[in-house]
Image (cartoon, rainbow over all chains, first blue to last red; front, top):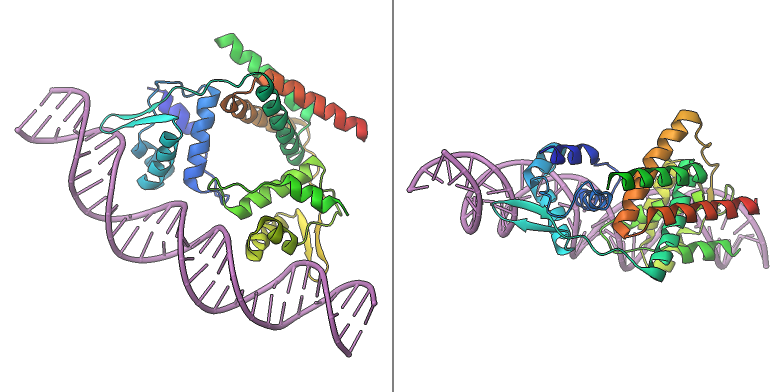
Length: 135
Length: 135
DNA sequence: CGTATTGTATGAGTGTATGCATACACAGGA
DNA sequence: TCCTGTGTATGCATACACTCATACAATACG
């Protein structure tokens, strides 16, 4: 399976004050959102993750544990960890409000990073379109 | 000055495992990126922040300390904290690569939040255009 | 059944984050 | 000069995060 390796190579643990287990948690959730991890997929083994990033097994377990409590994955002893069904997409007004909130946040982040928001928006559109093609 | 109050009302400290000082640091940087905090502006007093969010003065200091080390603010004893000059915007290839990176990140975040990336991109464009108008 | 794999669990030790309290140092204004 | 507001600093206590080491339990497979 290439999935695990692709996944692990796409994950970065930084030393920026954010707890490792939080970084893992967020990046796995992000991978699910991006479609890199699909429902039913086997997650990398806790030990694989621990070895790959040179962190403790318990730290990985902490992240997986939270993912399970969030309903994002299912942990099966002796077999492995698997991606659960994703939450349904938002609808109507909720969706619009959430998009608005996200847009403002993205705008601020872009400004802080010195990135032109118009360029960013066009790239988002392009990437989204490219992803639609595949499906 | 209303700025401080507006700023503080726009900041949210959550209990999600991310250290408080990191949350403060990131949100102040974001406020600078969004233009809510401009170069030369006085930052909220450490004590103001501590009281507003009911956190310890040392915790606020930790955040301000990192902001100073990052060159984002200047701390002057007896007077207060002030926003420093912003980093120059990126140019050329660097800008493009950074935009690409940001776009992918945003796309994944949007997917995880159940937000349509195309809607998000259009909102970003609209907000950016609205901000241009003002200047 | 025996072995390897994978998840689950515990304890010791170290470092960090946070809160609380108490100061000190410097700037500005009454 | 005195007072107030600001940043700076310390000690103490508690809780958490992380690592390391060492297991145990359940599953898969030959």
